Image 1 (tube, one colour):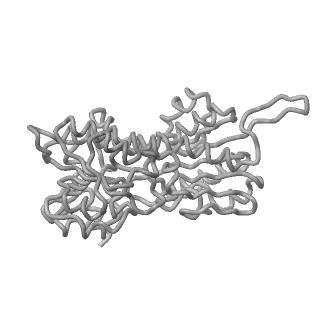
Image 2 (cartoon, rainbow, N blue to C red):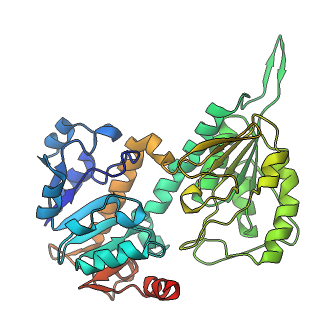
Image 3 (cartoon, rainbow, N blue to C red):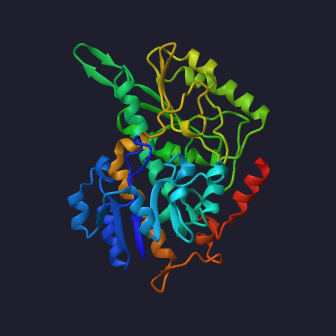
Length: 380
């Protein structure tokens, strides 16, 4: 089958869904690959790199959609990608991030084109699917980059330094949310020498936080264990108690990195405007949940703002700052998924297969994913 990769829209998205390395892997499995010329430039992959891997480069974005049997993208229309739904065609398989639990209009538009939408964020969180898990691979880099961004903006050094001119005290970093992004942020802050703490409503993460050499912040009576590795949504009473207890920890921190997300929901507010006002001038908040509304009440998506001397980073394309490696990991995830779906030299979205059923959102003009259908019906 012919796999096509267009350039990403918007221009702030620097990742690419097919790299020269992943293209070579796809060709070994019997697929041909076309890539829009320049699609990999912002990630550091040149036209020569692709040609050396046996990729055919096309000059026009539309040519990818016209010719490809399978389209690989980082962001489809539902995930704030380009307005590509009108380019999709009957039976074409579109693979990428799609936010189908929230982006209902885009999902309907793709269904109307009778394309088969494969939403990578719906991949089952199972051992078998780990090599295909784009959320984990990208969150890992996002956690790293969040700390690097904070270190760049903070008017303090991260590590303790003992010099003839005096001792420099280490920065205090608080990471809220101990998922993949949070744990990588904790590990990175710790490596840079910061006094690092981690907080999560899931008590089961305590051991993971401590294994990285960080202190686990325990808030008595606040817990929200969910399923699939995610936190459950809290009651208003739990949120109020959490805010009261967390306020002191936030106020004492030089850097706060927030990573909490609930699938298909607006991100919970964990750092209130009142908490930000109590932080010291020069402090930094990096909100990795900005794309879904943010964990910080003062976050402005796609902007860096100053609130009483506190810098709030709401960059929704933070992982694009390490686009070379982010693209490599993302592209490898897609290759692994395609290998799993390929049976007898044909790509088959078998509804009896847990992984295929988990990611397939639209087919034959219908929304076929039960969870997505329920979300759409609930919003109607």
